[in-house]
Each structure stands twice: as structure tokens, then as C-alpha cells.
Length: 294
Image (cartoon, rainbow, N blue to C red; front, top):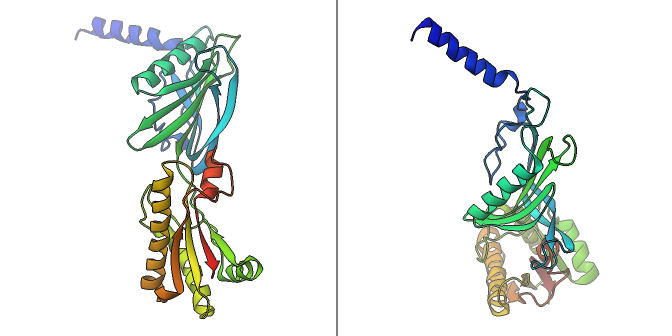
């Protein structure tokens, strides 16, 4: 390439980028990728967060046939991502992407992913997408900007629906107190694969405390009772809850040496809720195992 053509190329490149004002990505965002969408062009991620469990506040239309109708707030819980990205400015100081451009891009991307736009208006898009690795719910918000139509930053909050892992387990001492006070104990630290009766490894600490109490109280005989939420058929949940109770008994007998004839498995499915089945938090409370004196 001749020196004159090379110089001309450099001038074109410099002219293209001279007017663009871009922030730098925050280093802490390097390892936190958006699990649903690619990064929006001409933006710089300045604040990112990822956690095992959190909630996203969402909106949906009460009546989907009325796009301008009333909305209804709700929440979804699970694995959580938060990403805030500044929109770059051009040489005049104007933001390079408008609210409408950003909103339409996300609406189209949601449709391409065969998702559902729950509510879209002005600065906000709320959506739900099902993928092989889970159920995603999100909120895209345009924040700041100059006037009513520009967008200074894109804030994206996302949840992949998942149950919280119970890190604090009921101790043998607490089991003794609850058994003495009410004749039963509720356990939330026993985990199963979805729609299965296979115990997960995270259940081990709670099972160990159950076994500790049973070994201390050698004359005690108990029911192990499985409970589910209302999702799925009552017949399926009844069967599943009993299978899960049986899995607990099998583990206590095999791993901890508890005599199986002291334990009886029962399953009541969704018939004894302790919270509403209308939201994730309530359903999580209803999915439990109880140990009841007999």
C-alpha cells in the first residue's frame, strides 16, 4: 500500500472515532456475562452483580388484550444477574441510542427467542424466556439521558428461576426442642432434583442432624412426611412426596445406621400448604419435609 493511501485510511479511521465518547468497562464486569442477550452495541458495562439467589421485581399486563391497560407487579426469585451499561455519546454529546431503539431491539430479540414480552412502555421492557437450561425473567430499563427520548444507561436485571439452597440447617438441639414443643419438625434443607425423588448432596448436613437426634432418642418412632407445592397434578405430587419421604428414610438407614422400622414414609403432596402457592416464595415454603412423632 502506498504511503498516501495508508495516510488516507488512518484519517478515515480517526474521523470515524474522534467524535465518539465511550466509557471503559468496569473490570468486575469481565467475568459476569449476560446469560440471555449479547451486550448492546456502543455501551460500556460499569456495574455488574451476580448472586446465587435474589429476586427481580417485574410488571405484567392484567389483561394482555389491552396493551395500554393496568399492570400488575410481581417478583421472581432464583439465580440473579444485574448489569448496568452506559450508552456511548457522539461528538456532540448526544447519546448514540434512543429509548425507542433500545426497547425495539429487545422486543425483537425476545420474539426471536420465542419469549414473551410481559409489558413494554417508554423506558421499560419486562419479559420471560424459556430455554433448555431454565426459565428466565428479566427487566430492561433505560435510565438517565437527555430529555424524554434518549437513554443514558441500560440497566438489565435477570433471574433464572431456582430454589434457594438452605445454608442454615436445623440443629439436633433445635429438633429436640421442636419435638418437645409440638411433636414435629419442618426441614427446608433437604433437596431433590426437579420432579424427582433423588436426594441432592446439599441435603447431607440436614440429614446428619436428623440422624443425630434419632440416635440420641433411640425409643422415638417417627413419620417422615413429604410435601410439595401445587404445580403439576395432585396425583403426581402425592406420589412424588411419598417417594421423597422414602428417599430420606433410605438415606437415614443406609448412611447413618438408623433402623428403618422406626421410620414410616408418608406423602401428602400439596394438601397441607403453609404459604400461598401463588408466588415463588410461597411455593418454596410448601416444598418441605417434616418429621412427626408417632
